[in-house]
Image (cartoon, rainbow, N blue to C red; front, top):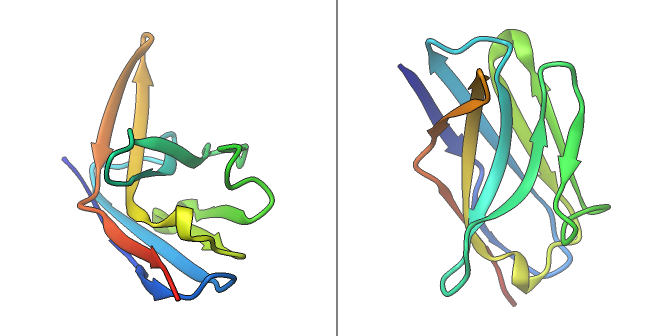
Length: 119
């Protein structure tokens, strides 16, 4: 089993910054791709960012240039530095770990952490 626990969410003013962290435990390995997704009311869940065990990163268009993902593979943690936050960034942010075997994805999810950007 894989368990993911997010932390760092909260309320921030537009233009501010937050740093989210995700701690993984259980039967996790360094070969998992890890990332962040977000889900706002009335919208579908969308990709924020992913990072492979080799350090390759991918960002959604709406956050590119503002957010930075990083990981400490040895400690099984992944972080998301969020700068220049906008009200439209308001959502529940979920940590994800994915392992692909023979073309089939196996996903594990955290409980989510609320990020609210408001004056």
